[in-house]
Length: 158
Image (cartoon, rainbow, N blue to C red; front, side):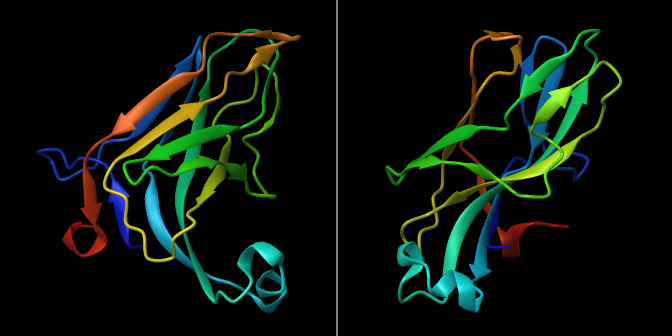
């Protein structure tokens, strides 16, 4: 981990970014990481000539207290203080993006934002989470959360 977008509380815990949609919420502590590419990825046009990439990763935990079914796609976009506008994608093993029933609680998944610059270290992050839908109607408006406190990995007490 290169760093995280969070604030350390008085008790030594770090604060989560969260977005709420009716009685469904997602929360995360975004981290900046470097990912070593495997041989298959290195052959992809978008990674041509790269051995590593940098990404902002949201490890998402969800909570659901709704008494109705809805769909959540796990989509998000991010904007950094370096001017990058990034479209996130979820990991293939994610249980976050799915059709939720009232029994579903505590799903998880990862949303990745690949940075163009392999040495970038954005200090600010703004994430907009797309809304869940009930039928074809959005439950609420998209939720945008901002984090202005970047903590380099070596400065974090974990």
